[in-house]
Image (cartoon, rainbow, N blue to C red; front, side, top):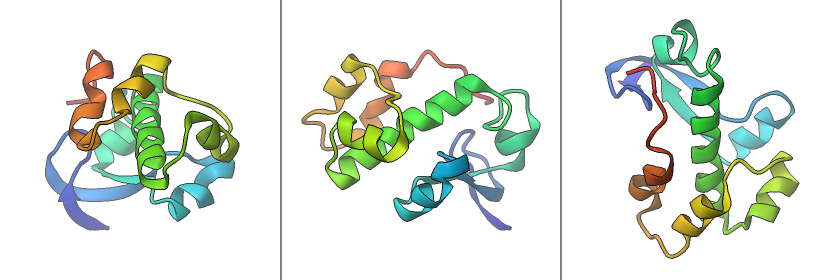
Length: 117
């Protein structure tokens, strides 16, 4: 295990790699670097953790889709071909268009989600 900042809570502590897309898409998540570093609490222990909360999972999948689309130059249809489904609504996709600093701005459209911090 390594130490670093947790992607969700921002705490500096022991972190674990979390594949945003698991199961049959785990290898693709690794290939496209669709992983985040999470503290054990945000990864699996808390009720709002990535492995226990559908809301947190969706939040991470939206982030992962945005990351993949920007870095690979994909459309939503390209993402669906690779990962089987679309996690973004049309407004979220539109918000990405022309946004150079997408990592800092992309989550304005889903800021109402409650994360485990």
